[in-house]
View 1 (cartoon, one colour):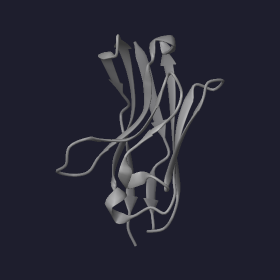
View 2: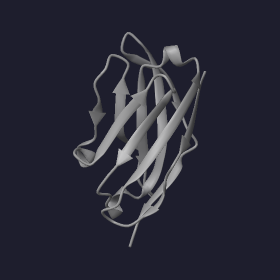
View 3: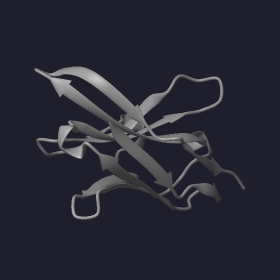
Length: 120
């Protein structure tokens, strides 16, 4: 089992910045991908950014150049720095982790979600 707890989020004006943080615990040695998804009202949950266990990062096209994901293995955290926020970034942001076997997802874990609202 993997536990994920988010912090950060809130209300920010367009063009502003926010930083989300996720602390993970439990069987963290099993984690393959870890990162962030989001879900806007009436929309499906979508990938924002992830870090595979083998290194590198994956970003959705709509956040490239604005968001940066990072992982601190000493603190067991994964952060999402969000800059130049737009109203369309308004959503509930979820921390995500999965375990895989031969490239196939075996378990998915989700945090409770944190609200990000971008509005003037």
